[in-house]
Image 1 (cartoon, helix red, strand yellow):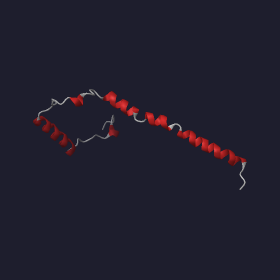
Image 2 (image 1 turned 135 degrees about the horizontal axis):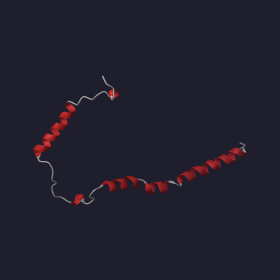
Image 3 (image 1 turned 45 degrees about the horizontal axis):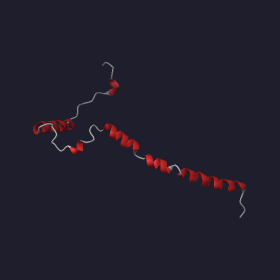
Image 4 (image 1 turned 135 degrees about the vertical axis):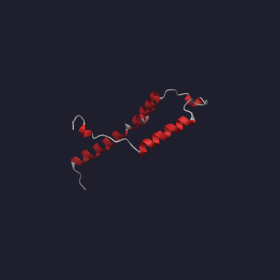
Length: 91
């Protein structure tokens, strides 16, 4: 089967290009997840908080229950929203 000069040039070029694409993988793999870890570290107030086993100050049970029930009721009967297209228009 005779091969043309174009095929002789195209096949090695494609092979070299595909191997060159694989050479970038170790650098990308090494940096994978670093932006997420950086963002998490910047948003953590106290990284050693997991070592503190003392109870957290907060709401008492009665206030917490009241806040929770109020929150649940807000979804049972949501507030009526005004028509957003009528802003600035008089009746």
